[in-house]
Image 1 (cartoon, rainbow, N blue to C red):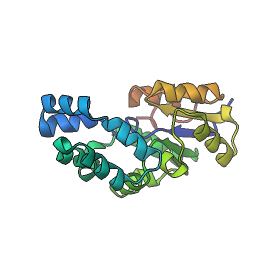
Image 2 (image 1 turned 45 degrees about the horizontal axis):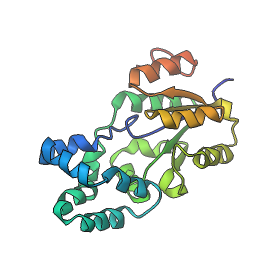
Image 3 (image 1 turned 180 degrees about the horizontal axis):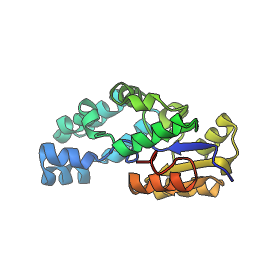
Image 4 (image 1 turned 90 degrees about the vertical axis):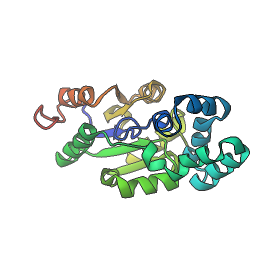
Length: 206
């Protein structure tokens, strides 16, 4: 089935998301490992992705672990440094698709407030035709409801959607619903897939 819309994940597809790397740089790998063993920071972030308030959730988490209070607050206060840098080739692909008139959607696990903040730093986040942000929808990948919401909102047949994500579990749910999928392992592989689908020429996918 011909692709009628391309769906991008954001973290590690358009923007690098490696919190451990940030903490290694700031507090050192040994302290970072100790903190991550004691504090479920990714679980905390999952709550934000589900729609809980960004500031309130992280600051409350910091108070639960006074030993790590300042470091946990960095997840909020220095958040844009955790979510960096952008992946330039992927951004060029997003813009090239839109330049060809191909609808481009975002389907992302992201909190409400930090997504709004990210759009002020990364202009390309404002350039999607449709945004499906987990915090706004209060549904997250890889669970089925958020995929259903995409299908119902855009009105396109699942087999006309081409979705890329770096996490296999997110891809697998989409595939089970009939979406076309691409496991993102680097921008060049994604570019090659878009060329293979006839959505971009090799020159446009550089």
